Image (cartoon, rainbow, N blue to C red; front, top):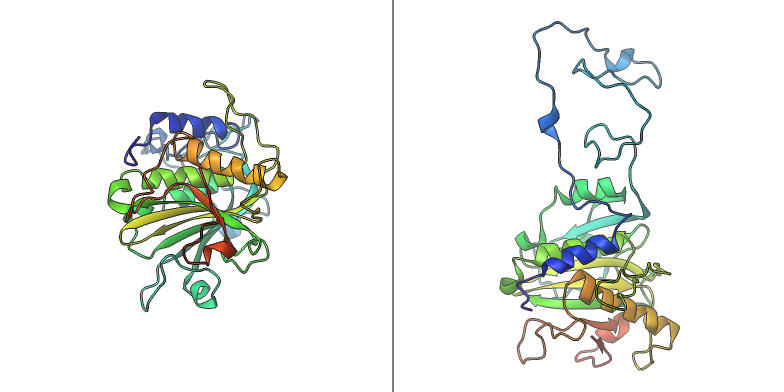
Length: 308
């Protein structure tokens, strides 16, 4: 499979993984259902100051439906829903695009200067708020060089220094910018969905056609990020712990880390487990899916990596 093609099966895998948590993949304003204006006079609506405590302004359409007592989600009615789909955690989206000075690529989020360039976009804790944010921000495919998004659990800074990250590591993939421009937005979207749905520790199905078992644990991932550079994009999943890369999968932490990597490669990115992403060639801008601790990644030419 080429990096320019994400198979249709990926969308199905992600939808199955997030079933019951995310429900849908977009929220649209159902403006077509708005009632047309009439020429008949209407009672003037009360001003905000005239409303009593707890009183809700009547609909100005004059034909508001009575509350039937039924639960309505945003997927039932985009305007008159009365419940939200809460996420397991609150997430915060950050953005930075340094405009001046020399910036290392990739950036090292352990310096105070790095954090000074970062801006918090929004914090959210429901599916509706996520889609409201996603539908109104610039997609990575339109990023200038050196721009980055970071999506982290509330209270965790997207920095190696943070207590929740300092002993951890990251799964990552790098893809050539021009070859992946058509799919990078979906790759980032599916990565975010797996993060906020807390499904990265979902085991792969034991056989084709079978549904994956639900994850037993989901607290190892602290955040995800995407970095745009002049010639490539990089997506990474950060974990709060990192195992000794020489340990077998009988080690509990190593087993959890491998679950995350396999789910990322197969269910999120859409590659086969044994399929090469395209790295390995000299000068290639595309890497295999690999894991390394934050500490080891600071070593030039680090070979203490897990590659799947």
